[in-house]
Length: 546
Image 1: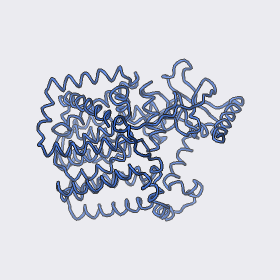
Image 2: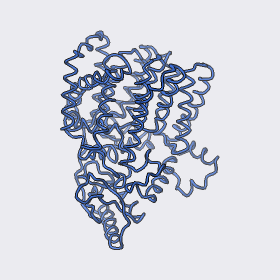
Image 3: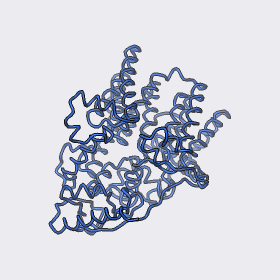
Image 4: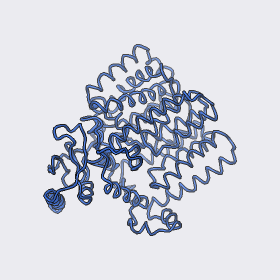
């Protein structure tokens, strides 16, 4: 907790100072401390995304940003903004901050933390954006800009990767500054994302902030649209937000087209980043082939697509069985899955229906645009991969829009307190979730509280791995563990080794002397197929050993 608090004390002034610099050009999403911090996050992330094509996001890039942000913070006397809070507001922010710090100090338990978040951050910190990295491990082709932001501060400011914990504290400041009390109800749920640099939390937080500003009729459409595109860039399933930003600019504010140009440029940067790392504009869709020799093998993409379809049904049906479904079967089996996923899917369906009815009754133009945008996103998710993690943000949006005028400070604090007790209890005693929600798989990876959390956040160490070589690529594979969060680079997950070998191909360095030049794939020779089979046998044998 103490080290996260120190990171927060350092990074909040840095982000405020950086945000103040950006506001000279774009303005901000809102006034006050939080508005400057959000501008700082936006500006630094875009800057580092551009630079990561060229250089790694290490301490040599981190320190100049820290110094520049602090100089701006003290030069413009931004610290005076903290004295605007009343004693009651300071007590509220302090209390919520203690809860956030406590929950953020627990061990990470989201599986993507080990298979996607940490490996991505390691690559960005050591090499920057690597061309064709998806050939090495398809998951790495995503390279979310939120991980670019986290990687840039991971050498010195936030080595334990708790940027989401810090963001949740800033979100609390925003809620108090703008008296948007209903948003206090969301913090206990978001505590579940505070231990990892999960992109899910920032996109939910930022989308709620943009919604709040849209409902307040904020007329700075230049920054609103750019920031909504920025959220989409963090996680493309948030496509509804730039759509809302565009519709709001066109039909409510009726702003000039020039105000939308920065947003379109950010979208262009996103497509370029994806083409560089994945080979196509939007991960993981193999659409618009630009004939780059670093794009993934079609057979590997096919296997990934089949897996995504199976995940839609929580791996309860084989791909072949799903292919035999009728349209009625697609819907029925999705709604009637075993376990908690079924309840989430049913709740999602009824929430959308309820939101449409609410919109028709209210007959408000802004609410109608929000509903239209959310429906468009929901249809796309249902068509491509209807996994609950892709539409969880919709629950927050619908609840916010429907009840924003109902929840005052007192009601929100009551809900916040009750939910916080439940969430903290589940985190401290994970057996509660494991016993009562056994189908919620992440709950099985929650760990008990440790005294050392009062000083530093809990992190896992697993530096056991084996080294192999095929062609010009010498790579590492975690021993008796499917993910490579603590494995020396270059590392490949077991599952992708099996997929590559099944497809008869294997990744290679584009330049045997320089890993930064990226990766391509090539067909295995007969000799390499024998090597590959030996590697598979070695991996399988390791699990049989005591």
